Length: 147
Image 1: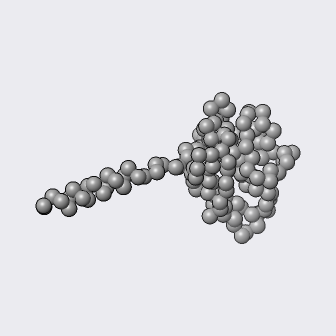
Image 2: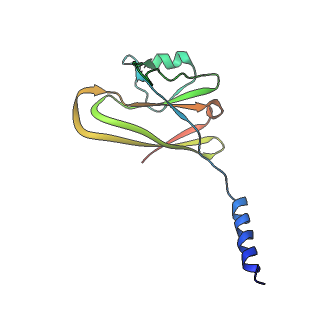
């Protein structure tokens, strides 16, 4: 009888673990050292890029000397890119992707945080973020949320 509470606790723990739905987080990486071309049309929504030619249509390489100065190389045979591009502004704006998670078989929820500084800059910027994903998610529906 002494072992009954312990056995009950272990059994409930195993039951709870077997009912877990699994990790729905989606792995991604950010492409660095690109800029949105000023002759490209401002996208209304997330921009999905499936080829190098399409990437070059919207973005230019912003390489600089030193460590980390090379633009991120993207293998479009294995990956595709999702771009979030905001309108031109004179306020320092930081776009950060908090997480991407699967909500169903063919839906990805993108959770963004956008921080805008109140102080005006003496120049204009075009805030953007390039996210590289595995091609297996290429046909998923994308849903955005802002925190």
